[in-house]
Structures are given as C-alpha cells and as structure tokens.
Length: 377
Picture 1: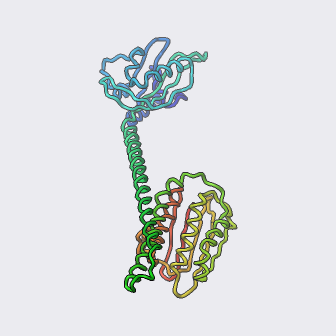
Picture 2 (picture 1 turned 90 degrees about the vertical axis):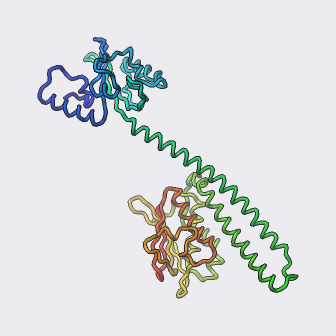
Picture 3 (picture 1 turned 180 degrees about the vertical axis):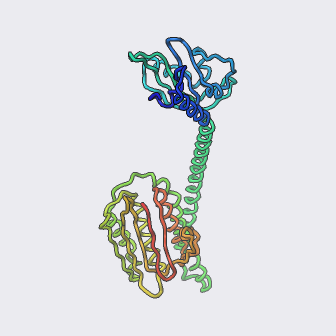
C-alpha cells in the first residue's frame, strides 16, 4: 500500500492485487462513513477526477465531468482568493494545505468542509498534479458556530448584568451611607426612652446593611479582578497579614492559629483573593466556635502530583451538610450560626474567587468536630 495513506486511494493503479482491493474497500467505507471525498488534478493529461463520495457530497449529476475551470464554482465567493492562491502555491510545489472552507454544491447548497490538498510530485521532483480530500463537516461546524454565538450572547448578557449590578450596588451604598450619616447627626439624649431603643435598632440595621452591600460589591468585582496577572505570594506572609487584621477578634475569643507552609512556601496567585480567603475562613472558624473549647485554626499547603491544595481547618461546632457541601457557600445559608449575613456572603465570595482562577473548593464537616476547607489551586 502507498505511503500516502488515506490519499492513496485517489491514485490507485487500474489493475489491483487482492490486497489492494481489500485496502480500497476499507478506505471507501471509511470515506462513506466520514463523508470524505477525494479528487485529483493531472497536469500532464489535463484531467480532473472526483471519486463517488465527492460527487455525492457536491451533488453533481451522474454524467458530470469535473474540470479545473469550474472548480472555483464549488467554493463560496468569500474563499475564492484563498483557493486561487492555494492552487497556485500547490502547483509550484508549495506546502500541503489543511483548512476549513465554506463550499457550495452543484445544486447551490452551502456547507462547511475540511479540505486537505497536496502536490503530486514525480520521481524527478517535478509537480505533475494536485490531489486532496474534502470532508463534509457542516453539522459539526454549524454546532460550533451556534455555540460561539451562544457564548457571545452570554458574554454580552453578563456584561450588561455586571454594569447593572455595579450601578445598583453603588446607589444602594450611597443610600446606606446617608442612613449612617443621619444616625450620627441625631442626638439620642433628647429622644424619649422608647424612641432611643428604636433608634438603636435603626443604627444596627444600617450598619449591617452597609456591611452586606460592601460584600456584595466584592462579588460584582470578582471577574474583573480575576483577570489581573498572578504574582508570587508567600503563604506565610499572607497568613500573618490576615492574622494581624483579625487580631482583635482572635484576642477576644482567645483563638489559637497555627500554620505550616514549609512544603510549598510560595504560590502564584491573586494576592487580594488569597488575603480574603485567609481572612474569611479564619474568621468563620472563630465565629462558629464550639461552646466546649477555644477556637483553633490550622492552615497548611500540600502538593500531590504537582497539584497544590491549600487547607484551612478549625475545631468549631461544624456543620450538618447532609452530603450537600455547596449549601455552606450559599449567600443565605442556614448553616451558619452568625446572624450577620455578611459572613454567609463571605463564604460565597471565597468560592467564587477560587473558581474564577480555575480552582475548586471543597469542605468536609461534622457537627461537633469542626470544619476543613480544601482549596485546590
């Protein structure tokens, strides 16, 4: 069998051996299944040949005689200049062509095709023709174009939603700031006792709403921040920075923090995301402490088969996840004991930050035995 492989069936000799006929049968069946048709142009004899499968693909009449002069008619006008240039280059012994083109059948039906062509060279190195195959990939290409269009629509909708969410969060933030400013201007000493109690509730609601809106603004900005270049970050330094920020809470609850990043001291990551991950998960372990013991938070990083996992675990009261680990990352999760909904939003943000950088976060927990967060970087 010829070394030209699949293309060899388009230049077979008139008299074939039994082995050659068997090979020819197999290739013809493959061509039929894959909708691949062959052609060749003989410069010496000035003849063009289409095999049966290509005739079926191009929907030519039985008595149709292919000609190089009419070859351009089988290509969409958008690709005429490319086809002419390719034929000229192949005729001069240029490199093989392999690409996707839009073609047109004899009955004027457009379809997408994967086209492969190469020059035919004789023993003296002279180009005596061109041969190739045409594979009908119309269904595959149409699905690809539909998917691309769907992606573009989703991206456009996401862009509009981002703009809208940013606008809404900005305006809500302005109103919340006005509420807090108003509460600061009121002289509570001049208020009757019952109104003082109501005003205390008013201030607490305004402060809580302010915290929630701030976290929601973080959610809106995640995708933009995820496109920032990754940098080398020291895990120990990032952990210590989070410890320092949470020092008042840590000292208040007499929490013990332990870290060991000796196995992987440096990672490439978004430093802002990493800081938020440490702060949120450390705080979560302290806020959801067990009533039977003081909070303990452990953080370490492991490498397995060149894949890194950042692990943060606590000895808190744990969660009853009932096999659904995603519920802990919902913004309105009932699993968190903290009445401040910003903590629920915080876990939601952490999950989105990790996934925005192509990672994954998992959690294992059991009531009374603490919680372990596993972040696959």
